[in-house]
Image (cartoon, rainbow, N blue to C red; front, side):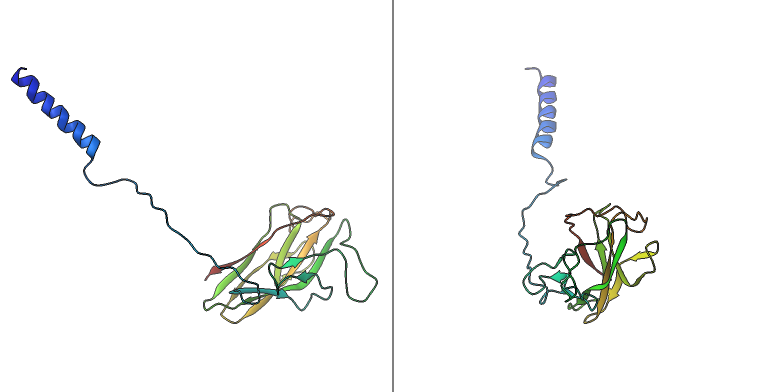
Length: 180
């Protein structure tokens, strides 16, 4: 082998070695880590959901044993039982749910309803008719609480409540608590 060919071959090997073995620095790393999340019944949770003072039809249940459920189908208030909400209306349930901050930090409470679900949660002063509904947003200091109402659009068609609830719909809502 000629000397020039040998020197060029060594230079080529050095470049290939640098590409193959790298410099010790890296662009990406991947590691698997565990995470632990604790859940509890609402009575012991950091954000507690219980029936509010406006729940005179016993619509809110489950807070002692697991996830809170709101069922608006049959009223149990001693009067002739009703069955759901009126078609073509916005039905309002003020102060249906009480939200309590049992944590040690202030939080901002809000509700995430699915788009076009036909429902909206509103704060204590968030309802002034079907065309004037302010979505739930409240700041809670540790130990404080707020009441949330529920507006259900069953065909009225207000822009304040996107979508329409149909008979038998099951809607999942997320109550958020974000650090202030």
